[in-house]
Length: 537
View (cartoon, helix red, strand yellow):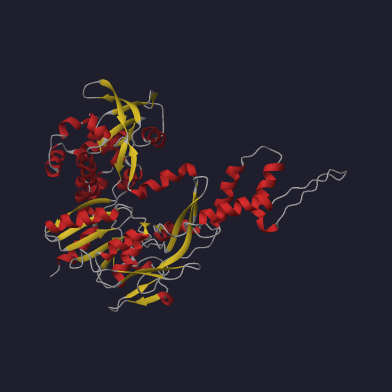
């Protein structure tokens, strides 16, 4: 998703829409009845306001009682589906949940939790958050929220989150059970602002080589990025790998600000243009803090929109290399327009174009669901395994200033293609990953051994302990009890993959992402290739 974050754009449109609706209702709709032997005759005026007239007619005359608000919402959804795949209607009841991730914070009690046997188990508390400050600990079970039992009643995670979240400064009563003391404790927690981070992790991969993973382009992402860059520079970084895999986009201006950090002054980053929107160019300034750093961008089939803007700016300006697999292919810009009832419209108002002039939006047919099946079709056609399966359109060929060939019309094509390495896959590995058993075991093992494992103060020390305890053997016993048929050859072939992921997920429960990504990097072949490129003399 690319969202235009300009406050001035279309600020007047809700007023115009509201005025038009009121005017239409006031002078544009009449139902006239002539009670005669032939029955009621209904006339609708004027024809130009047909949708409103039909809705009012249904409300007045339909045989059964119906919610006109619900029908209106459904009509808007159907209407937008005929435009493009990314124009969307957001009901008032869903607007906060949809927009919070891009705002970079929400109001709550500051815990990360998991559901285990219909019980809320706290995985971590946010440092200096409301829960941490009053003594709630990882491993605590939430039994009640405001005297409502939430344990063992098959309540969904979303329903529990709604009970825990609320306006800043309000209180919520939470009853927890602490296994280490076998006690129930009541806490009155005052909700506060809880940050949502979009930079998952940043650390040094090797001397001079830094790594940053960005999960979306939210309002706070630029500041998080600058903080991470400054830290890496202090650690000797002059070569940077920016991981945008799985990043579905976000705010257009945030992607532009991050791209600006790499480019020389007056280099074109991106431009937008629409039927009612004249072309608008966005250029780099002279203030970039990464202008002297080498850069590689990692992308995959789930890198979309704002991710593609950043990758396209780097590629089209010959500023760095793109490594991975072809990106999603979303070149449309939406603006969010608030409506009078608290709902909102995300309307596509422009396309964006990379510096060479290519629009990377993949084809779509209005009203068709085929657009959403594209990723599956790519997989079935073998695109995740080999570059040769990708059909490129020569009519959408562009040339960068440095002479590189790039293509539009379907995502960003990487400079170095890395397919999925299946050499260590097996029937056993596929089955346990499909069922999420590695994650489930890691959480259960961490929870059962929290007291003894919490004493380890480094990831390396904890990993050594896990190997001492033969965690792979414990996992094999666990999956056998889950009804999995364990083949010895499969275990041998997939041992490294399984063991590494077990250690990564367990360490994440104690060291968060700093304990997860560096371990997973050991089996990340795309990342390894990027390091190899940087390591060449």
